[in-house]
Length: 199
Image (tube, rainbow, N blue to C red; front, side):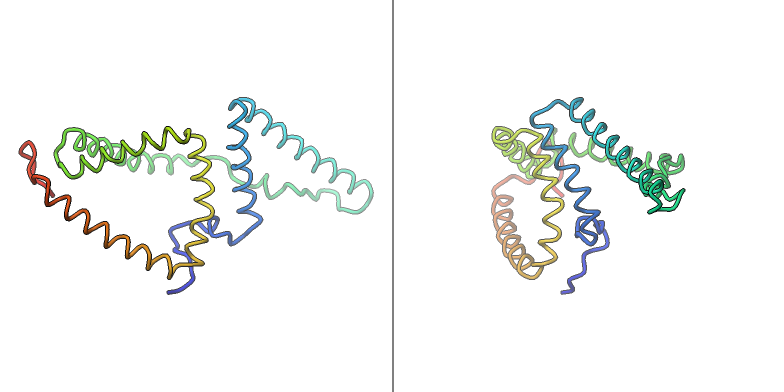
């Protein structure tokens, strides 16, 4: 197997540019950890104040370097940031709206199917998932789960790329066992419920 990451995931999570990835990962992680002890308004205001002080510091440094003759007048270290487009194109928003509506409709239809027990097996799996979530909710609050997910988002893809062969072997063994257990459970459950046919 090749060591190249799949093109579907951004290069950011594979740490191809460690400075850029570290800035994104670290900045968001600091914000999330700050939310565990401070309110959202406090974290936002301190983050914006820190950003403002950083920009003022860069501007002051640039001004001093120009006055000292060590930099050219008109050289702006923040020019790359100032050139970033912030406007969201209207055609992008209008092209995303049908995708969002389609996804929402699919989720609502699936939830209706699960709650109305149209498929006994899928509803049992859904119920077990909800039951497991009650235990996860008792152990962690939502913010802790968001922090763990963020750390996992930036570590698991790189770990997978570095250990792809071993991970694939373990996942294949686990999937075989899961399929065996699923087949045994399905054999014990009636295939029809309320007139709906099992897929």
